[in-house]
Length: 318
Image 1: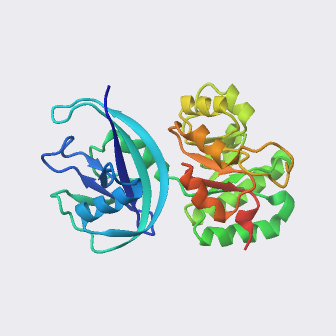
Image 2 (image 1 turned 90 degrees about the vertical axis):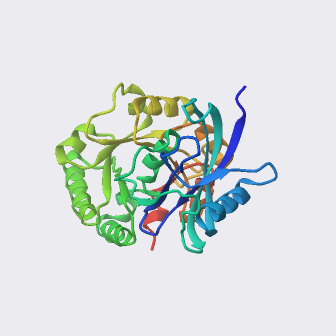
């Protein structure tokens, strides 16, 4: 039986979203491959302690602001310079540190953007993580029905100025003509800020208007047999079967709900954070938490392995 190796992994990020990759130096297994910095956790260490030690040894920095994120297992095959092994990777965001980044082990360092990785080859276990990092931590859902058009558009522009990058237009009460008009307005505003816009449930409309993608309700997800081309495709999930189908189709991300009671479904059963974490533990596509959440829930969502949080009400509040 292959021994399970515990590894602490640092996603060292600048405020603009760039993250640091390091090449594995000569003499180590998978030499020349690129990876997130980090290394093996010693028997007497917690993952956090291992992370701090590894970054001090590899890069000469001490992290001062970290956020626990995913834990994932990966089976590495045997290669010419490394035996087969199974690793359990504990990922942390590192956004503040003391010291100057210095390659202390002969490795190369490179700052990368999620949308444009310029180094290769990248260790296989890191690829899905980089896909997730291309998504923002907040997914906003439109709330025209409660707010009215003028108030909503003001709130939209305010949030876009503050960095909002992903929006779902979900207004089932509108006629097709009104929805088309509203969606076009939002898309025009969002493009000024390089934000992406998805429309709920209408693949044809998304393609017709040229918006970035479509967000499928769970029933539509389960009837879908193939992911549409040239669109970002997301979906709503409420159970393991829906998550599995979304993963099989290779969707870009999903939303899992409800985590907490919501204003529209106050007495409906909720998942809670523990069940949410258990359900997404083996999912390889990014997952947003949804249901009664506000911005202060983001650290909890990340610690449970979510890419971030989705919000329909709290996100638009000043």
